[in-house]
Length: 182
Image (cartoon, rainbow, N blue to C red; front, side, top):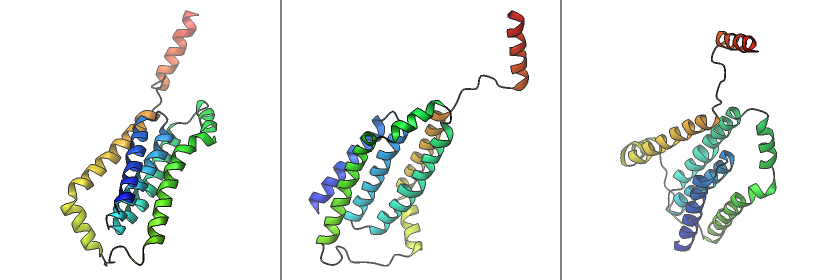
């Protein structure tokens, strides 16, 4: 289990560094998705398949879709059409695809090579999950919530457009003043 764990940890660190260093928000989101998937793989390797499943469904699925919609809605305009054309080029997808392929190959090797369950399955009811999330892992849950809130605020800040006209009356006065000057 040591080698797959270290491979996944390396993919996690690389993907997370790529999230931080990308200037384009969509590229950063692609690498963030790979980072979240590799976190799920780490949970699986550590014997927490339920946490891995929650990581994939909630973070890599629902929240990433939310982030993509926020960025898509906030970056409207003619100048973004050229950006969208660049995003469809193959070279944009090479890095995230390679990291995702490493994780997928590692997952296939682990699942196919294991003779039976690697860890004994245990039924976990929702009460136990809630007690662990809001008991032992309370700090982690709070940090994840703050990170998500900071990401949404950052997306709103990135996509914010400066208004030239704050109110319709101010616009009319400005136009009248410009006409008077001319």
